[in-house]
Image (spheres, rainbow, N blue to C red):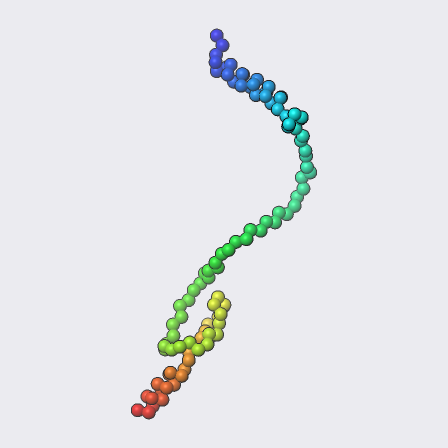
Length: 103
């Protein structure tokens, strides 16, 4: 007795071989091309929109309150320790000093 597990794979193989022999590109044999392999540098650019965030941050606090008159540095720029970052408007402080001296 011939087993079905032997007949089915053999039948599938023969059917596949028959179909493959009759397949071609629009009635004619399919063409095959070859190309030489060459080594080239591949450069690809992808436009990306991003926000750059600093790794180090520092808090700034003034010893006195007042209105900022001049900012000496731009955001994101490096600064030296002890260097001025901003200057305050001294007009109100000078008035308060004169009033205190007059008493």
